[in-house]
Image (cartoon, rainbow, N blue to C red; front, side, top):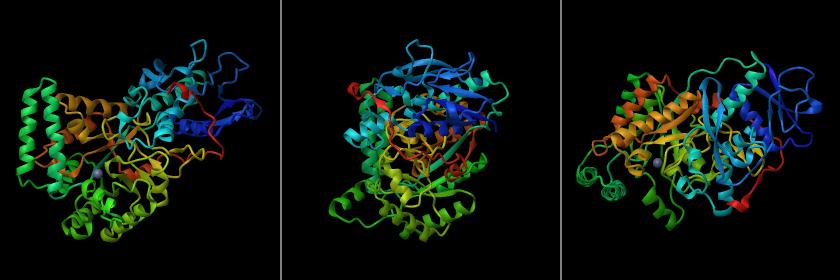
Length: 487
Ligand SMILES: [Zn+2]
């Protein structure tokens, strides 16, 4: 593939810039090489970053790597085959004349969750609750980082026709299922009952009395019925009809080390013990034999505990004997940018699917692609790969309390966005919600149908490893100038 020089001023090959150029290469399908003017080949396609070109007509991007958190605006960007798109960027990254945008810094700010990182440094992790994050929440609505990469590709294509290779294949969805409940237990009735009572109140407060009554009836049914919650085979059969396979994340109980640990696990962890559940073990072995993937669903309080993660993974491998487990998702999306991926990496995890929100669907890093996350502490890319999770069943029901029409519209929007950027992202449907108590399987069937209509393939989470080339960054600190005074 033809190398395209990204020319920067001498002395400012920052670690964030090196990472971003490599990530941009992966997302745009181009071979971008970061060089200074003196290192630039005499001939060949090039893009000037913060350095004025000697000749007119050369593609140029201003260098404005500073931002005031929350200060964003929409700008129209030509994204080539994806058409003109209104893309949300940081206002400070537009140059003074208003006719250029620092695409590279915006990509970095999205992909590295820069605002979230600053928040975490000051106030601790948000543990995947978008509501706890300040700033412009619209930045999570679409995969803006992917659109920024497509806009840069378009810039190169216009200046150097024929240099860009054909666009990549169609997009893909990783269908995933966290196994939180396999038998209806008292704690399930209580946890989900509370959600339903709360939503009945919300429906009344927003003038939807019939929805409130339906929710109350479903809460009563949940509390009193003896419904079966074991639906792994149902899900696999549904997916087989579409030619899809999926990833099932299983939990393994660990002994708590303290009284508080015991209480946390009793309340929040899945209420089953894989070692004492031969039906579950047999079902997972059958699924693995049919091409599904078994991932690990780490415990509620394991989000920064590499030792616990490693033990949980090894216990699952020892019981199932279906091969090495390389992918994971944290239970309850408990996650910290500073700690979770590092701990997972130490525990032998290679692909993680936790990067999503608990309380809303969307693109937490502006991305709908597997990528090597940026470690702000070291200025380097991590070895492991993250695949964003953009939709979970409870977003539509417990958190969103949406009507059927709005649920379908939300699913259509998210899948459409992944397809529009030829991206890849996870969706999560829990295994027990195919019960009559929930009836959420119908929306899942609709989702599978929409994937066919949108020409989206299904992919296993572990296949994300075959995606991006590793994105190593040189040692050194990130010299981003965040205007924290505006936070
Ligand atoms: Zn879970």
